[in-house]
Picture 1 (cartoon, one colour):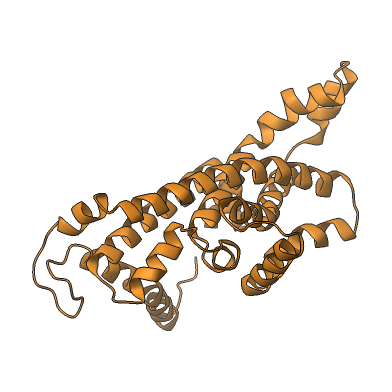
Picture 2 (cartoon, one colour; picture 1 turned 90 degrees about the vertical axis):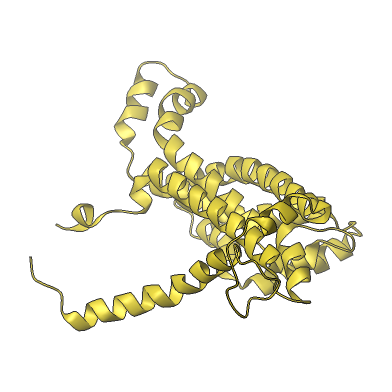
Length: 262
């Protein structure tokens, strides 16, 4: 195998350091025994204890978890149906309609959803946030499911139909078990996107509705205390855990070098 040049390694190290060193600093300073992040004073778990007794933060985290669970369930069902439709029916307009919410800027989608809810005279709150998250998570689930369907052997479904299975039975007992890793990966991705989202939530939450990203934003407007670092660390760990689980359940989404080398 041809050895990669040194400058390529240096560029890669610089790029990864630029991406992950700020995250590492957030994690380290969540254990800082000082209200200021200007310098390191000492090691402590006090900020995690403060976080555990913060009722406002716990309420925001509960709202985000509830929205994330609802969004992951609904968007997984609808996204799986959309992925099946894209795989089986070669309609040019269908992929555009499904992928469009992913491609357009989040701020544009947030404003458009806000105007849509106002025109419907729909009260902004947790329900409007959940509906907005479902709207842009469906496309992500559909893409994951479609990628899983692309690697599936269609002759298995045809064999089930030849044996007398109805379309519903063939999907339930043959297609669904084969694409289940992709479905679960899409659900985890939808949950991660929902619990992390700020821009769309900011436009569709309404007054008095608080989620974890909105609560963090309201806290950093005053000062970045180690409590913000603590909740950011926990959110980061949850997100990374879900990404790892999604990658393990659907390995075709993150192919290794051995799989991509001819």
